[in-house]
Image 1: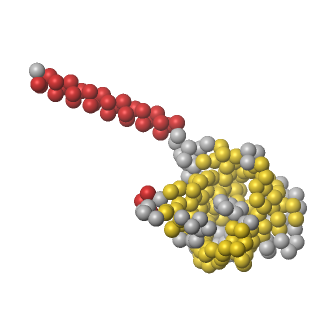
Image 2: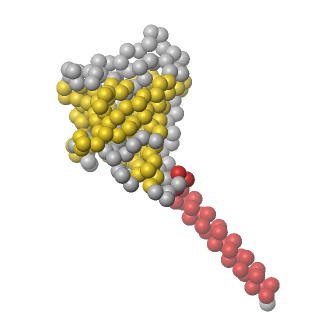
Length: 246
């Protein structure tokens, strides 16, 4: 009798384990992550492409997806509305409505960056894309920023930029020759006093032809008192993909 109970118990555990694995497989299939973009490596173009100059009316439309589950978060339109000493790019989402503007001063150097939450306004503009379009170029920039709408506080920002290679990539808007580069923002200061450590990381496929990125994929993580990096909190993990441009 005892042997029979042991056999039944073992069978029950096996069935339960099999059921859990099956459920996990179904859930994984339902929430599979956004695949990492794959491009075709290209050699250094000659001559080196020149970034398209900004003009009023230029526009880029992006699908923004949650990398964890591929969910479409929003469709964001970015449009150049003024050009001069500063280039202002007006932004809006189909779901979110009006979004904070991006300001470059001069073109290629970001003064007001709305890519992260909360938006940042730098004391001195820093490069938005590599200053040399050559694979292997790297640079680290130290800066200070203020949170948009809160000019009383100033915070440290560090940006490591590494140009990896030229790639051809396909997106809904077409096929583009891009410079793929990586940004790291290690241990920057947050305006949130409860955060004691912050990092951000992103990969960008930049097309000089359109003067903007074709794909941008990035995330942020942070810790508070008593939390170790192995259990760090996540900010949004998003991928932007170009739908159309003009």
